[in-house]
Image 1 (tube, rainbow, N blue to C red):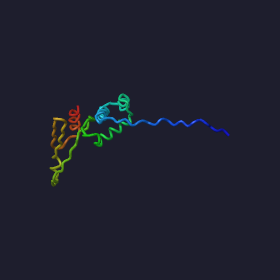
Image 2 (cartoon, rainbow, N blue to C red; image 1 turned 90 degrees about the vertical axis):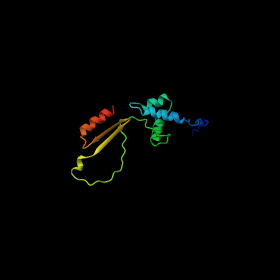
Image 3 (cartoon, rainbow, N blue to C red; image 1 turned 30 degrees about the vertical axis):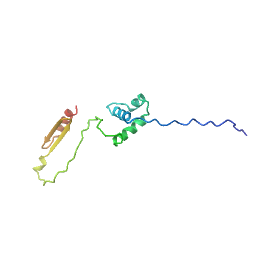
Image 4 (cartoon, helix red, strand yellow; image 1 turned 120 degrees about the vertical axis):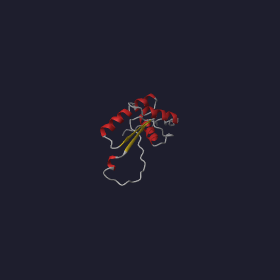
Length: 128
């Protein structure tokens, strides 16, 4: 029978977790939300794990990293739905309607029936 008389050496205990300032977290989230940004590269350059950056992004989207400002420019337009009073519909009403697009200080109002190709061209020009 073999008996091992080697002493059991426990691994050193882990130090305290690093506490990053809120501004640091927001800055990394802002960098990671830039078009074409690599979360892994950003995390490596700043000495944190990429999973931590993804966690901060999730917290940011939930509004837990302070004031939720739009740092993201993914080409999507904000949409606001406002309630309207129901109006009796008839065939003439189907041609009426309006679409209002606001991007920064630019406001575009399309009235009547919007043609899909015209709307696509307007959106393409606005999002440049």
